[in-house]
Image 1 (cartoon, rainbow, N blue to C red):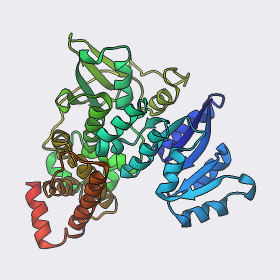
Image 2 (cartoon, rainbow, N blue to C red):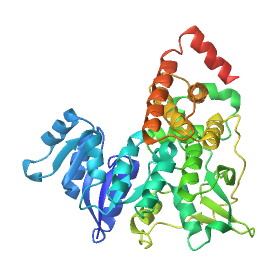
Image 3 (tube, helix red, strand yellow):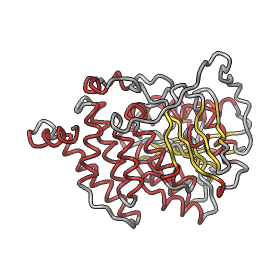
Image 4 (tube, rainbow, N blue to C red):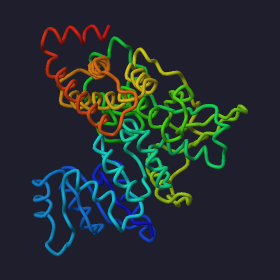
Length: 399
């Protein structure tokens, strides 16, 4: 029996983790659940899975959760960052699933590692921000982080049984999102609804927008660099609209191993939870006979500048990846709130990165300070887009 703590239990990944728990009740139990503000769903999950601990965003959310639960439930309800860290490091947990969105995942992931927990990671921002620190701490504890992202799970599987020194390249596949074939002169007309309409995957709003800008793939490049110890020059992004091949590893003898499957996150999640076992998920195989032609193409860095910005942050390193991530989070939320245009997501990130003085050898406090600085910088830019001076700056960045 593997005992789980699920951080982000009401999100897309968290809900799929709980589906797997329901499918295999003899193999998994839930000891802690953590969400943000979706109290109604969290209350349902608490009653269904009977964890010892439930965590929410703040005291008001905690009071709401208490009111929704029967008094006999017996679950301990806590809140805030301390609560998330407590859930991540909970004493009776074997595997901590980090599926919260954004920079909020860093502290709980470090808490889980410090407590000696196996981490199943769906929060790529943790490694984007502080990959060197996280991987080093995991190594000191003798732990291996298991990836949940479908691409990194695919790479993890393609590396199994192979010598790392034989790896020539990692090939991250990307669907290309909803705007792969949209003419560049139409990008200024993209609406929030357009950007949330992903052709292949069902995901949360933030990651769906990141997929539309290809920032998600850029963040995955940074994540892969740390997870697999491969320099960014040896990580290529390949556009594969059919999403049948989830990623590939090329070896120095010219061989390429690929992991294939239907676009459903349950496969990657189950592998992270059950490794090295494979669970009988009863998922359909890809329809190879009816799939037609599988196509591949290079990404267009000019039409999707967020990917170029991520490669730049990966190359420079230091505090710049944390700045990239923070600025992107601010910009994406501003776009979802209809405050800026789709094109301005990249503009806000680019301006924030250009304004940052990079610390090349940061400690954790330096990374957190850079994250906070970038959020302030990006927020000011978003708020000032109506101001003539800042509007002129973003117009220059667009050119």
